[in-house]
Image 1 (cartoon, rainbow, N blue to C red):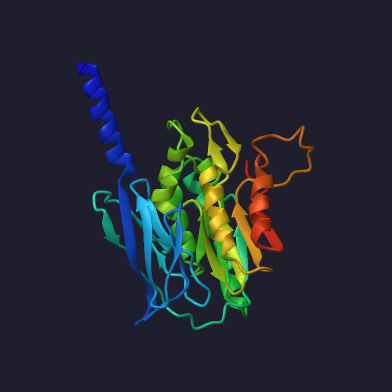
Image 2 (cartoon, one colour):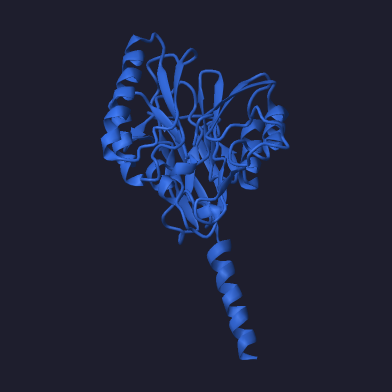
Length: 310
């Protein structure tokens, strides 16, 4: 009988820790004006700001971040070398929390813009950092010569299993004055953790959410994490978990018909090999469902991914 009472107590504690609801609310604004229609998410649910820029987002204690889809026409705020579109949720004890996002109206029209895709810096040694710096200087020259706003995306393998170089990479890219977005690669995983849910813990501390979206001009960009860790040594496959697919379905539902969507991820969604012979590490295994989510909401899309990710 004593064991029965202990089991009930442990179950009750588990429900309290993992099932507690949190209501996030706040405002997305620029100056003294709220911004209407901005998507706000916890990585599971998505809500939108009202005419005053206010939102309410039901969530729970599993939320790691509250973040927004950066709207077109506003500057991309950079803090500590990363786009500041998210707020980490470190205190899970408060059932009601306020999270605000302040943006600044851009001085430049981003309808026409340039995006630089940088894949696999994959820094293993400190001696390799100057090579990354030289590549960044080339990007800086391109940005200075461009007649349009320039943005960047790093498509994974930011480092070669050495997260101690994250800060150095962020400094190098910050010096270009180009806002760079990031997605994780297989060499950005935290190894020997118990499940995939923990495999991007170090990455998230440095760069924030591992999947999100942002808008520039009339283009909707979606960053995804398709590196699925198998919980043993360096084993992983190319796979999108259900949580991301469900979030993506909500995200794309708001895209106007005919929108151009650019998907940013590390492991590609196509291969020259036949499906029977393809390697589970080299191409996303459940890509058909990714394409279904895309086709539910849009008529055109582009996939921007790294095909040389090893």
